[in-house]
Image (cartoon, rainbow, N blue to C red):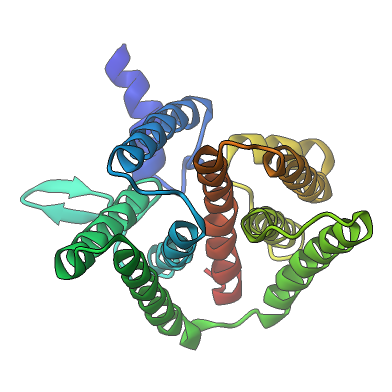
Length: 274
């Protein structure tokens, strides 16, 4: 029955985290379709309102990406509850993917407040970036007292820096012009790959996503890390040549989000030992 299918593959992974993997083929596919639809609608909405997806927009959003990754650890560390009872209705606002809906709403409200105060697009973007930085910094310092595994943290940052440094060196030798947005995208991806590699290979964690879990199970964490690096390099080459600026920058932002947010969560979760 449809209700049994939904219960088994969509509800139980949220309700029973100790008995079910958080992701399976079915909920992953549905979440991906919903995310793609949401991304399309957001892009269309931004373009209709005349918002350019430029460096200032990119930099305004980045602090919220980092904040989302940090804030997600609050539930892992039991600072926030997994279940919120609202009038007899059980909600799970602080787990993936619902927590990112909250982050988006916070971003929208923050942008709305700055727009109401300034009536200026550039000042609004500046305000959004500053507010996101404050949110991320405040959330980070809440977690600091619980930090334990500094060795794994330094390994993650070191591997990410090494992979990104090699990317920069190759581009320097090839005399490829610098592109900050492409660099952020590459770093986000290799950072996520490094966090997954260290977490699964040394810190006793397991990959939660279906594809990543398959790759690690088939050939070990090194394969996942290598694929993340390879994907970042290919994406950089393709998107660097793209001439549709708004579309290019929006895709760069999305790929950055899909690396930087989970990478930040994984790093802080590992360091916090939760």
